[in-house]
Amino acid sequence: MCKSVFPLSEVYGLLEPGPVVLMSTQRAGRANVMAQSWLTMIEFEPPLLGFVLSERNYSFAALQATGECVINIPTREILDAVVGCGNCSGAECDKFERFSLSAQAASRVGAPMIRECFASLECRVVDRSLVQRYGFFVLEVLAAWLDADMPRTPTLHHRGHGAFMLAGPTVQTGSQMP
Image (cartoon, rainbow, N blue to C red; front, side, top):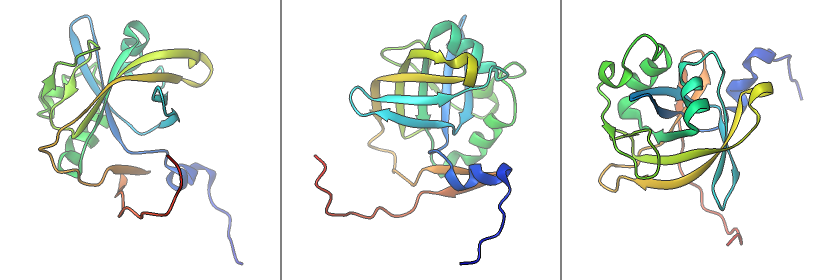
């Protein structure tokens, strides 16, 4: 075996935690959306997600104040909008307007769903104990929506430095998990 030193600043690209999502929030009547890829499943039922968000992000204050958001799962077709949402601040522009995203009313939270995404998860913050130290929120999924008319193309995964990959083919095994 011949392994060489790998830069610690690049580890993220090896362990990329999950698909890129568009997190939408709403505070004081103003909707915002941000690109996010620092999330992980924590529990199956009820579905709990762990989510890292820096207090430097404009969406941080909205999530802290309302305790609500929608995790929207985009497809390759809107990659330019995803990248755009990740490269500008909601403090400076209306990202829905700038990137031609359509806000759609959610059923359980005040934040909007994004019509152009194939799935949307309405969430509420249920644990803030690690927010001050790590920016780590625990979210409970209250309602989940899937657009049956939209093709479920592979999810986007951020590899760092502007590189993305698409999820590969599904491989079915003989797992005995219920």
